[in-house]
Amino acid sequence: MGGGGSTRRVTFEADENENITVVKGVRLSDSVIDRMKEPSGRQHRGSVNDEELKKRIAEELALERARRDSEAQKRRLKQEQMYVRDEFGKLLERERISSNEHLTRAILRERAATEEDSAYN
Image (cartoon, rainbow, N blue to C red):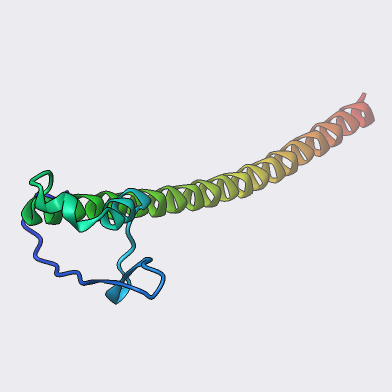
């Protein structure tokens, strides 16, 4: 993720308190926001150029997206596991009831056969 040539354009603004806000609802990690708050003079000294900053932001966005996807997948998996557990429990209960019914019928047949044998002896 992140290296796939995404061309999403993101615009940043600073409010009156110089807090960084994101236009169009893109969520950024704290580390990206902290880097964005750094004085712009640092960037001009050559430590981070615009392309490198764009690449870092894109990577952070991709990581954030992957994290959200992973969390969503974990939630779905947990829901599916709960569903399977519930269905398995229902199946076991039906099997238990069925086994008890078969056992009861077998006992009644055996009693009837025993009583019949006793009546003839």
